[in-house]
Image (cartoon, rainbow, N blue to C red; front, side):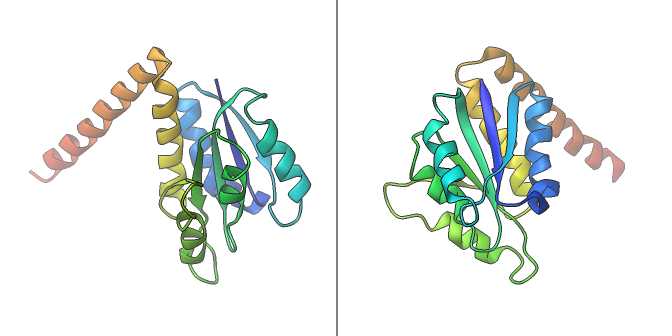
Length: 160
C-alpha cells in the first residue's frame, strides 16, 4: 500500500516531510513528488488520473498561496485526498486553508491544519485509512496513541 505525498514546490518540503516522517514511523510505503497545479498542469493531470493504477491508496497534497493542488487532484481521482495548507509569508497560510477547505459539494478534500501540525496529522490520518485493511498499521496506531497518553501523564507528573 502506498501513500503519495505531493506538493506544489520543493519549498513546501520542510512542512510536508512531517507527513512522510509519520508514515515512515508506521511503516507505510510512500512516494514524494513536486507537482504544480499552475506550472505543470499536464503532470498534475497524469499524476491524478494514474494514481489508482500506480497503487496509491491515499494522496497527501500540500499547497501554499493559491493552493489549488489538493482540490484539482481530488477532482480527477477517487483516491482519497488529504490537503495540507502550507504556511505562507503573505497571509500566514489562511489563504491556503481557505483554498483547500472551501471545495464545492461533490469534490471532497480532507483538510488538515495549517503548517507542520497539519502535515503531521495528514500522515496519521492516512495511516488510519490504511489501517482499515492493514492490521499491523492498526497495531502501530494503537501503540502511538498509548505513547501520547503517556506523554500527557509524564507532563502531569512533571508539575508535581
